[in-house]
Length: 129
View 1 (spheres, rainbow, N blue to C red):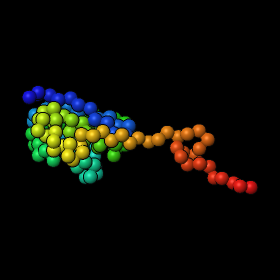
View 2: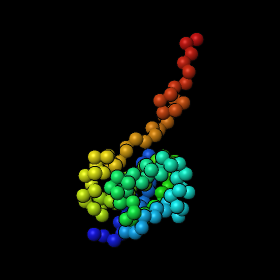
View 3: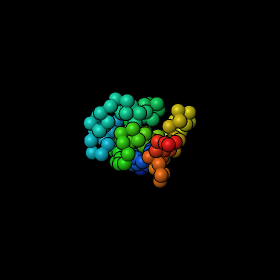
View 4: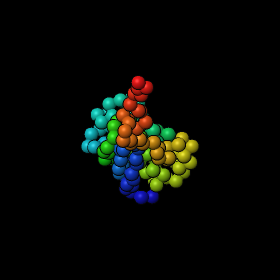
């Protein structure tokens, strides 16, 4: 069993780098406690879902560097990175996380704006006359 696990998770344009060590269960994101960084309870639960499902939230200290995107993308990126770190620590957790779909990278990204259009797909108003 490794002492320090370093993994990366991505979602939309957010990138989260997680450093996981055996400890008491403290979670620090960008040098802030998780309660201060993710003020919304739902985002906090979403980010820590892999730890809650595998019931290992009290066994590891988690340090996270996350940048890019918004709050939703960042919590998804943190979740994926934590799930990947858990599978490196304990291979039996892989089956549980896989059934909950926490190990799949969500490929949905914002579509780019096309020229001659208002947005990616929206067109300017058509005038017949």
